Length: 124
Image (cartoon, rainbow, N blue to C red; front, side, top):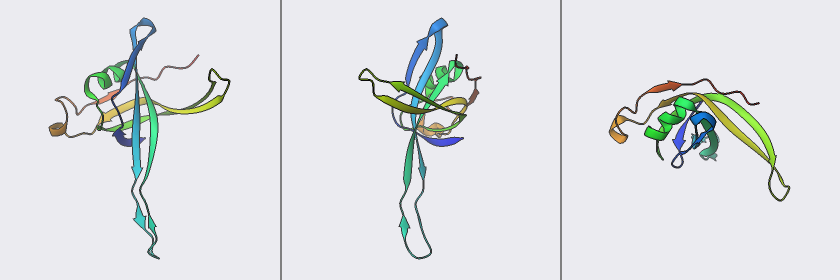
């Protein structure tokens, strides 16, 4: 489960049989605090790549924009690939199963407060 802000406009594409896939970057922040001895611990922001499929991707395409606050439920996926130079890269993605838009209506387009769910496809 993640709650965070969208870092840029979503990237939406359509794959085989017209299935929509959206990719967003989501920033989650752990607020800083002060220890009892006075030591300040700063805020810490982590960035997550979130993939949304089918109906979730279509909702993202229509209603989600940079800066919007989202609640995401999903599964973490790890993978590796070799680039054109033969360098191995490790990637971590969240494959979303549920999403709720948390940005207040006054700051977002109409119909923004909706919950959407979608079964996540299995990889072959």
